[in-house]
Image (cartoon, rainbow, N blue to C red; front, side):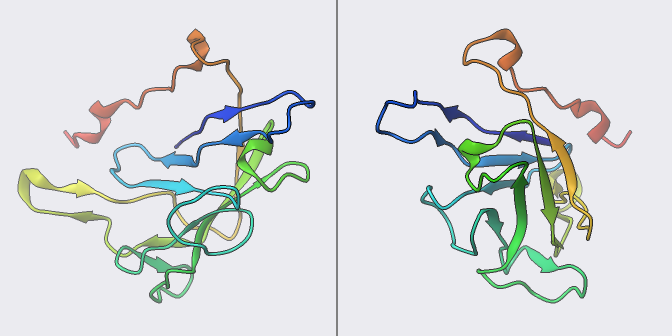
Length: 153
């Protein structure tokens, strides 16, 4: 699993609040990428308060129960440590709750199969530790997935 986002932090005297891009949640070997947004960002859907990603009725089902989700169903939600409710407030760690599962884990046939699976839904949230890196720094590089394990050979 890989979570990435960019944050612009402004000094306290500047009249603009800190800003952040949506959080991208990627998993190894899957082409499905989730985008978690907060109330300060425009984007697809409005399925609740806090940092969340809405389900897609064509691609997701609820957990438990396997019933279809609606466009206002929260499938992924992030809960930062502390009192922050925006992506720009994340510092150190967060809990990631997954409450949906893919309706289909793959699509296509033969050599054109696309994996659409993602993190396993669970009543217990995933604990994710975060790290800040200045833009352009060597340690700011996003970790690469090892794609060779996805070949299935």
